[in-house]
Amino acid sequence: MGRTLADIASELGAILHGPGDVPVRGIASLSSAGPDQLSFLANSALRDRLAGCGAAAVLCRRDDVEECPVPALEVEDPYAAFARISHYFDPAPTPAPGVHPAAVVDPSVSVPDSVSVGPAAVIEAGVELGDSVVVMAGSVVGAGSRLGEGVTLHPNVTIYHGVALGPRTIIHAASVLGSDGFGYAPTRDGWLKVAQAGGLRIGADVEIGAGCTIDRGALEDTVIEDGVILDNQVHVGHNVFIGAHTAIAAKVGIAGSARIGRRCMFAGMAGVNSHIEICDDVQVLGMGMISASIHEPGAYGSALPAQERRLYQRNVARYRKLGELFRRVRKLESGAD
Image (cartoon, rainbow, N blue to C red; front, top):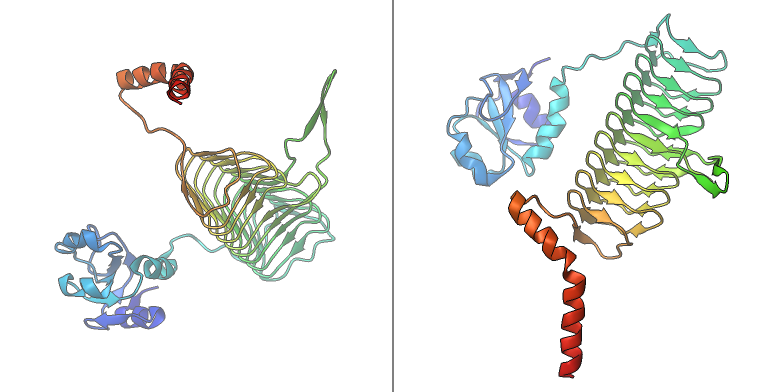
C-alpha cells in the first residue's frame, strides 16, 4: 500500500522539505530510485551521489538537505529510519491464519485462531503456541516447546523438544534449534555419549538466519538473550550464553560453555573457544580466533589478511624461524646484562 511523504514524515517524526502529497509506493537505492520510491543517504561522505537521484524523497541528515535535488526527509539516523519504513514495502506474503489440512498437530495442542500452520508442518504434544505464531511448510516443533506471541518459523525449521522462543523471534529456513551438543566421554572402547539434559531458551525479538544450528545444554540451558541477531550458518554449542543485542555474522562457530556479553559483534568466520568469557561491547574481526577470555571492551582480531603468493610463502618460511630467532635475541640480551 502506498503512502505519501507526509504520512512517512509523521510516522518517522521526520522534518519534510518539500511537498507532502507525493505518493511513495516502494524503496530503492539512490542510483535506481524512481519518482514514487524512497531512498536514503546514510554517509555524508557519499553526498555526491545525490546529484543524479530521481527518488520521490531521500532520508538524510540536516547537513545533507541542501544538496538533495528532490524532497528530503530530515532525520537523525537515515539508515535506522529507512529500516523502520522498509517494512511497509516488504513484498513477502503474509500467511493466512489457520491449520493446513496437510499439517500434523497433536490433539493436546491448543492452536489460537490467529496462528498459521503450513502444509507438512508437525507440532508435537505439549507445545504452547502464542497468538499470531507462524509455522511454515515442513517445520517441526518438538514436544513441550513454547513459542511466544508473533514467533515466525520459516520453511523446514526444526525445533527439538523443550525449546523456548520469546515473542516476535524469527527463525529462517533449515535452522535446527535444540539439537544435542557435542558431548562425549572417551573410553578405551570408543566415545561414550553424554545425554544432553539441558534445554534451549531464546529471548524476544531474536532473529536467526538460515541454516544455523544451536545446541541444547548438557546440564544447564543454552541461553540467547533478547534482541540477538545471527546471520546464516552460525553454530552455537551447548551451554553457551549470548548476551542481549549481540550480532553474529555468517559461519561463526562458538564452542560449548562460552559466555558472550551484551552488544558484542562478531564478523564472518570468527571462532570462540570453549569455557571462556567475553565481556560486553567487544568486536571480533573477520576470521578472528578468540582462544582466551576477554575482559576489556574493544576490537580484537587474529587472522592475517591475504597476501600475494610468493610474499606469503616467504613469510611462512620466516615464521618457522621465529623460535630460533627468539632464542638468539634472548641470548644476546642476557649477555648484554
